Image (cartoon, rainbow, N blue to C red; front, side, top):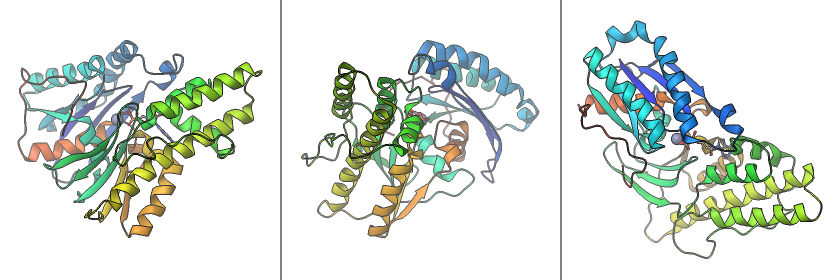
Length: 335
Ligand code: KG4
Ligand code: ZN
């Protein structure tokens, strides 16, 4: 079995995965949403302190599996340096004390492998990764061959939901809240600009859209305050535009000259839970005869089960790292 640790942002999570069957033997996650909601976003130092409390508590429950462990895996990049360090420190300590090899895992690879928890891999697959930190399209040919096809030039999809929620005083994390308010809103009430609509480039941008929302909010505030209905209408109009932006770019990609339409398309990451996005991509995939593959809702946001699933692949390839070599990287350019 492999014990895996995830602490790249505001979720402390540990999983135990059986190597031969890929079965998830144990999985627990303690989220810090409540603590960060007071500040309207993740406060890195607070997150790190909360990991120090939560990770040992979860580890305590895993003690019975210690004699069965063949390796310990940990997310070392990308993410918040101070929170990644907490998981990496724990993993190093376990590697030394249990005398088992250490495996470093790329968090984004983890999100891709959230599709394959307790399952076999499906290749080739085109993956849309939408989270708080990333908005990317990745061409996944195999475990070793993953290439970023498109990425955001500024904010990410999930982050823009968090910021709109903060502007409207609705709380953190913004994704599920904005989605909920949008249900009661009129998506055509505010005419927001679809980012990079005229650009032929396959890339994403959310800062302009966020600012357009900010201008509406400021004007309404000057005009006497924002009603509940107006908040719902802003959420609905914003959600529609943010998803339309993704749809336009995916369609542009599919229509590029000589582009081979993928047989399999997947959405992963915390924001892949967005129902509006899922519905739109479902329709698109249907029209192109492409299989849409989704991870289970419980594995969309950060978790150690997806890290454990990647770890099985790394273990089988004997991709180990020494405790001196393992480093924490806030950003990564490639897989
Ligand atoms: O993958 P994740 O748990 O953490 C990162 O690696 O960033 O993603 C969290 C992000 C947050 O920005 C959150 O607001 C967003 O995913 N999110 C959503 C939804 N649920 C979570 N965004 C849009 N719609 C949702 N339903
Ligand atoms: Zn993530």
